[in-house]
Every structure is written in structure tokens, then in C-alpha cells.
Length: 190
Image (cartoon, rainbow, N blue to C red):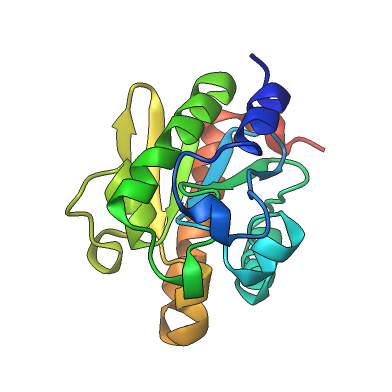
């Protein structure tokens, strides 16, 4: 299976009730062969309307952080969410919804094999790193799992509500870039 075949299958998924209430499935954005993945929790309203993760106000902030850190969803970053359909009123996805969608994230992971995974927010970090992970206390810390490095930072939507965390979060993106330079130096050559 290729990532395009996986995307096509996911777009037809009806494994949980979220599909019935959203406009479309939001699978991914960015560069599929990128070594750096950003994984959020679920699409919001703008993402549901456009079918692309992180395109609303929080996505614009994310793109500014990426650009300032020398990263780009067009060159060296792949973006997805744990849950592929928008929960009603942008509520947190329920545990059973997260579990139903994990099959797609696992397939993405098997197909693309990222070197670095950055969890955006508490829900992604607690699902992918460990259940008691605290973004506030542990952002920027690295954990290795089966050859992939995992870290977490604040979700960009959270930074819009709590801008006092922007400086620390931007520092996390700089560290991601630095770690990626060590692991994939050719990625940053001109």
C-alpha cells in the first residue's frame, strides 16, 4: 500500500460517528517523505471546510513558527492529526474516536517512517508519548521509541489563547530543527 492508497481508503472511512457530522475527512498535508511529522489531535472548522490540517488561525501561526525555524510543510514537514474528522463544536475527541482513527495514523507511520514526531498539544502527546505526559512541564523533552524521536509542544490553538507560551513553544521548534539537522543534514543543504 502507498500513502496515496491509504489516503483514498481513509477518505471513505466510517468507523466512528464523527464521519457523519463532518464535511470531509482531513488526512494530511505537507511532504510525505519528510523526516519531521507534526501530529495534532483533530481537525477544526477551517480544516473540515478545506480538507487540510492546520489551515485556520492556528495553522497560520504554525506556518510562521515553521518558517522562522527554517522548516516548511512544503519541504521537510508532514502534518496530520490523530483523529481525521472534526468533532462537534471542536470538542476534544473522545477516547473511542481516537482509538478508531489510530489505525490510519499507524498505517501512515508504517508507510512513511518519520525520524521525528512532534505532538501538538496534550491529547496527541498523551496518546503518542505516554498517558501522563504534561506539555507544560515536559515540552521539548525527547523520548525515543523504536528508532523515532518523539517530543511535544503546545497546540497552536492553545498559543492563540495563551500567548505567554509562544516563546517557549518557538524554542521547541528550534530544537526540532536542530535535531533534524543532526539526523538528516542533507535536508538542510542548499
